[in-house]
Image 1 (cartoon, rainbow, N blue to C red):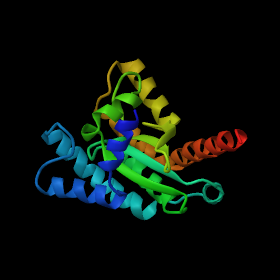
Image 2: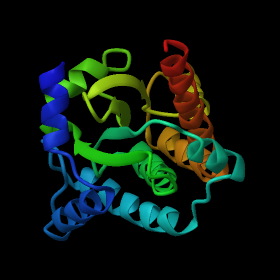
Image 3: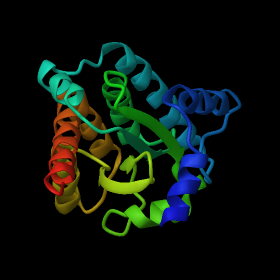
Image 4: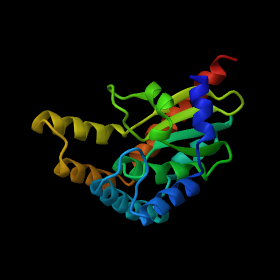
Length: 207
């Protein structure tokens, strides 16, 4: 696990660099990851527009800002992602905006398919679902916690749809994107901030 984390960090990028890599690939008709297809190019184009919009419009609530600024320790947020992932397009801009608000958090983004050993340690129901946020202690690269690939409301929507229709089709993907649109990043903020507050509580309760 330590080696997988170290390799993940070595191959990781800043949020801005991650976005520039995805954009450059797209300009050449390609996408990030091991698979290439017209559908993935289409999804990546949609995600570029979504992320551009969210980078400008996403707002972190005062309560969440207060809790982030109250963090005592330093942390690395290492996120496994790919440019074609619709969930990542909705979540990464929120995580980036949160990380920019405090010096206690450094956000790094790594491509899932370039970090298979690490991804295998954070499967969701046996699947390599992304984005996956891994919270690390900078001094030791110790894994303190993880979150993802979706906030609970979005996960419940997909679970319910799959139970009803037996598959995740384009209608389900559209409903999921509408859910994110109406949620405005608030669920991601709450769940991730709650995780960070709980991690600090556990860290300092052991001292």
